[in-house]
Length: 117
Image (cartoon, rainbow, N blue to C red; front, side, top):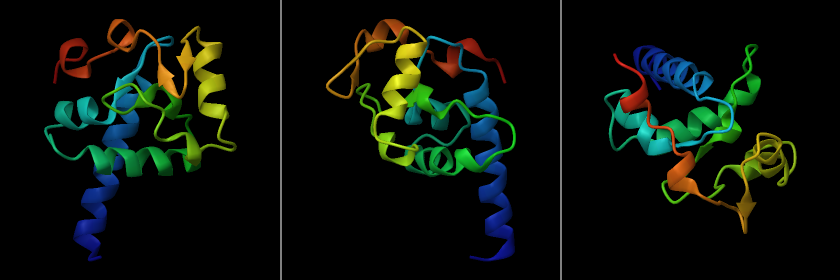
């Protein structure tokens, strides 16, 4: 990857981390909602890559609050153990059943509606 491409990717990851840090406790959002908010609709997979890398950040990134568009804990394998993501959500009173957020639509936080660019 060329340096220019790497810098753009790093900038995008930093933007993703900033948005994820704004997700209110007890709420969740999706990879796609973050990508759309950042003007990169269709880049939800790259947001997922950012979440995978978020554990190395000095400033905490609450990656457990980011799920797929169906409320599934698709990123759970990138935590210290496969149960940690659910445990962190449940600490915030978010119920999870069979690796899916219960009341996903009710708890969904849309950065495009909550944050103004």
